[in-house]
Amino acid sequence: MDLAFLNPLYEHPGPWASVYVDTSRRSEDMAHELHLTAQAMGRELAQQGAGEPTCRAVEDAIDELRHSPDPHGRALFAREGTVVLDPHLARPPQGGSWAEWAPLPRVGPLLDLAGEDPVAIVAYVDRKGADFELRSSLGRQKAATVVGQQWPIHRTSSVDWSERHFQLKVENTWEHNAAEIADALSVCQEESGADLLIVVGDERERREVRERLPKRLQDRVVESAHGAGSRLLDDEVERIRAEHVRRRVEAELDRFRSAKAPDDEGRVRAVEGVPALVEAAREHRLEELLIAPDGPDNHREVWIGEDPDQLAVRRTDLEILGEQHSWPARADDALLRSAVATDATALSLSPVAPTEEDIPSGGLAAILRWR
Image (cartoon, rainbow, N blue to C red):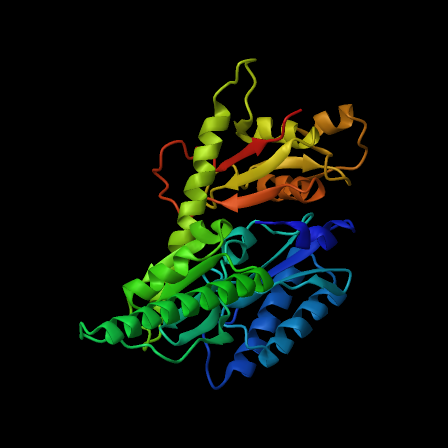
């Protein structure tokens, strides 16, 4: 997950209100239900110590969601009476809406709720052309239509010379249309930044389109045997998107395992456990954080200063470093703040089984930059 969009959260000191709002349960009385949620979240924040202006800003923002088509929910991060950031969620928060008042914004849940949300182009192809749809957790939208050459498109069973000549024209028409579709699909992917290309249609047409796509897109293509006249069900698209995420997480875990092995000079490029990660963060060596959501180290207490690289396992360690002001914080949120400040990325390990070999036992690990 690219964390750059979180930068506004670290331009000002805390404390912060972090609220995750579930809007997945649609009903005719949605506006009233959201109003009740707004009041409940405001009360919860007030009980935890948030000021009245911040509580009111959060309540107003939740009330405004009645005008939003968000199918899953929204995260709200507020301080001093202002909602600073309100990203959409790709899936609803587990257990419903909740709120927290803390020295740092609670961004850890975003890795699961908004992080890996691959955009897919579904291309319905046939001999005459193609229709493209964009699919994500927010729904579907029509992206483009490709109309190829319309004549000739049918084979003949005759062995007459003239009919064989006709069949060559059929082949040429199919090849032309496949090239047109592949070119349009490549442009659509570049413009949308789609992570996946799902090609739907008969086997031959799928193959001919795929073969004509640029090499850079080949590992993003998934083929579906559904006929071009039908539309993929949402469940099928979600299955393909989830499989894409799982493969990516497994690939990063493989990279982590390789990075743990010492190189020829005895250096390693991967660490796990809070002390080692805190040291790497202070040295600006985080390249990618790997976080298992239920790991026990996530909520382990560390100490932070005003700057992202001011963090330590013990408060006295910060005092030794010369930091006069310090606060306790969750390890995952403190490390994510450091990751944002140094342009590192982060990845949730939830798509793989918790028994997967070499999953960090504490739930926190990182691949490191070279010194």
